[in-house]
Image (cartoon, rainbow, N blue to C red):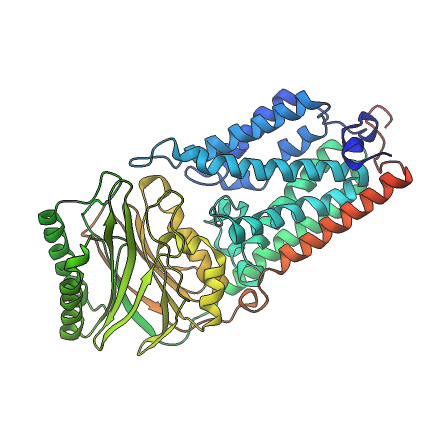
Length: 502
């Protein structure tokens, strides 16, 4: 009996060829495109065609040796892509922790796509490639510790009109569009009968234009309603793998944080957000620290998210990575980071996400990496949040990329996001992702004050959730079922004429 896997490896099932470049050149080009698309030094235009070399290379793969070369090249391209974010204090060994599983997932998706395309033809291929892309991304941010890192959508973080489609279907809407463009370009290059696919190319072009048009119109919107003055305050203390600073250094750093918080209040701030782990507080000293915090907010009449760590054990370090939301009336919430970065020694928080009605609007919080998981924005949106406050700590290699990623959560859910960041750019954005204020950690006085809207904008995504991955899964299931049916019946593969025949 002919299996799907065997038919995918059978040279008779593939009659089209990339017209100019051989396999080594295509793999080299794929490595380069993958390295350039996304993360630091991102070339946004490459994101639209980054998959094209890989898709063309797949058509030339015959035998285990060629497939192994493909997988190795994909690993190398992904490694180089993530290597771009490695700056002090992040070690190079950090890279394979993310690049290996990311490339493995992509390899499986590419192999499945090519097996189905060879059996079903390029018409199906135009649907299957974006379908597999969105399914893989949804699996990553819903089931793995990688969150939404590696999403194709993040190659377009500076394209605010396009990002507006995340308000409809989340980041997978952007990824689906980019992968559809790559699949279409690959078919037009590879097929000698490319005229057959010109209507599809026109439709894809119209879809891209429609997405940008929708975004441009949406960005013309005026956000009526109340606003609040929010300040970000960042610390000079360095809390890292080398351990926590000595008690005297921590005390001086904490005093400095309170002084900067006074500066923010004097500048008009009604809400102040410290950066993630702004200081360290020993368990025995925590009651006194919280009493000082309560006195401060009562005296100044402001809300403050006091973000700090509580050391629990050394070698390996274990600690609570938390904030205490203090109001003039007293403590409102104690929140532990729900999604520690892989390898981080923080005790994960397990409590439910809570939205707080405040005089300035409904607000909620999260900590740094938490906001790389779209489920957080959906929960906050469902709770009616108009403002999300996110203490964070980054490094130069992901600055300002990580703050821009968090802003996408606000577009998805329809609310403002204020991110206070050590070692990178603090940023305040509104419900459309428009920047209301930024402050580089490496410039200025570590205090930023911005006026942000607090009225939530209802989005389709917050109501319907991940419908694109579900639709993509149905397309993949249908493709697999049809491919197996054809394999069982011995039906020929659906391919156009080869270049030699045209």
